Amino acid sequence: MARVKQTEPRGSKASVPLARVEVDILKLVPGGFGLARHESRTFLVPDVCPGERVVIDLRSSRPRVAEVLRASPDRVTPACPHLARCGGCDFMHVRAERQGALHAEVVRELLAHGADEEIPEARVQQLSRSTGYRTRARLAFRSTERSVVLGFRSERSHDIVAFERCLVLDPRLEPAVAIVRRVLAGAVSEGEVALALGHGGAPVLEVRSSRDLAPATFSALHGLVESKEIAGARIVLGETTKPLVFGDPRGVQMGADDLPLLVGAGGFAQASEEGAIELARRVAALVEPAEKRVVELFAGSGTLSVLLAKSARSFVGVEIDKEAHASAKANLDARGITAKLVCSDAEAFSIPACDVVVLDPPRSGAKGAVEKLLTARPKRIVYVSCDPATLARDVARLRTGGYVLTAIETIELFPQTSHVETVVVLEPRKKRAKAHAGGAA
Image (cartoon, rainbow, N blue to C red; front, side, top):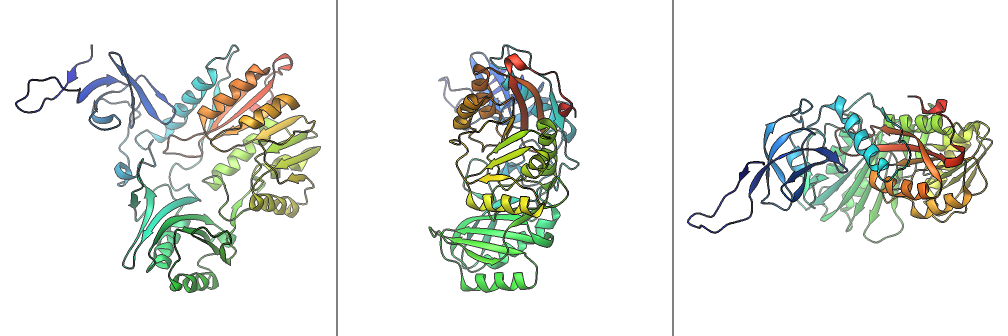
């Protein structure tokens, strides 16, 4: 039995709840937590590695590691001085080379739950960098007449953790952090700022402010665009529906076909350019779009579409966001690719007869789209997910509808964090193909 350390108030003999307990970390679960048990209790412990023995402090709302008694060989000292407060890079205590394998183990175990067929091994695709990779970031700010606090939200809190340098932020975005502090000076407000790279590699900003900003903010943004320190900015004030635009605030990243890719201002895109390219190339390899009828749901600005539509016999892309839809059209037009793009809700879209459906839904998954898939019954489904739990839920539903998993890949789009991007391939049970060339790493 594990040795228990507990404390009592001075002068009291009454029993009190456990304050500390020694546990073994059995495995990792979604969210990057370590699973541990003591007697009849189960704990989810942050900042641990499988196989470690630790002392956990139970006096707060969530267990915390008070002492590492037996460290994993995969444990390293985090390099970020803000980690304890920020909490964003919750895998920074794990050796970078090992993070991908741990992510893959978590994903595969979730997908295997309830399966009555053999689950394929998960192939891990690494990025070339584990730091300095983020070409997009969302920060919070709070400004007064005298100061501006700008940074990431603290873990499970609305507190803002200011920083001078973020280790995972692409160095090209560092000047933008100083620019934002400068242009918000004198405003009495709070909100969020999205940073990305725009035309010519210059930063673009989207500021969402709860209140009006100081007049000097707008003249400063105009000057920054004129001097080409930023490519553009978009300002959204309070509940207004019409933003103020300076220059061209659209993001620009390199596409998987080595041509520029426009991203709608403030719209969704992967956190890193390299990650977006790797993801698009792996999806295309698994889809094998040549001469196939391809439908892409949740198509966004066309990050995946530019490869899929190029060689497909026919292509239909579905995206509900108007700006993303417009960017996708611009991206395909710039490449001379003819395709059908529909501005509609992918969850409710009636899928036409096709060979392959690709879907890349938000974190909440694609419950509605899954039901449409079971009606359309394509020969192959390629599902891209940033949330293993909702992916497992939707895969389980597709399983009951007669599909089986034929490939699993995890892509390290978010090094130093517990987040992972997963791509799975499903095919009809009775027509299960042999492993296809696209699944090779």
